[in-house]
Image (cartoon, rainbow, N blue to C red):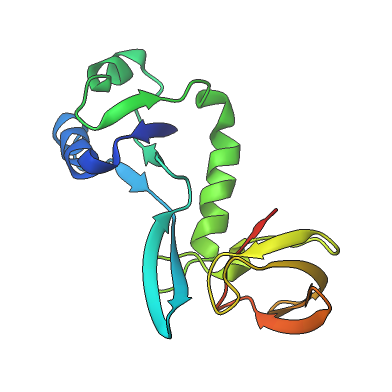
Length: 165
């Protein structure tokens, strides 16, 4: 049973440790990450961010029992459990499967994770065009043909990350 947890970033290690102590070794955590590359003053800076922000996905077979959740309620680093996770199990599993398919060998999401629809506006969040907005003209499995202002470019999905605007 998967649940969605709001956590305190400073105490993530403590949260995981407490869950392992109370539930045993059969607890699984999933926290999808992005690796952002920013270019500034002819240098490349790499930053890791969590895709879900302050939320993480946690699996344990007994999360359907309210007694288990109430025993974990005051764990250090836990802010709260999201409600209605029982009815969203298939959606959570689909999301995790999509993330796992689009991860590289280091566990970071690749650009292929994001879906593009023609003629929608997006913003680069990594690569040489960081913070520039573009419109998708054409997309294939490897690259995107885009329009930045009046310039037409082709960008690799593998090396760049984007977000919808």
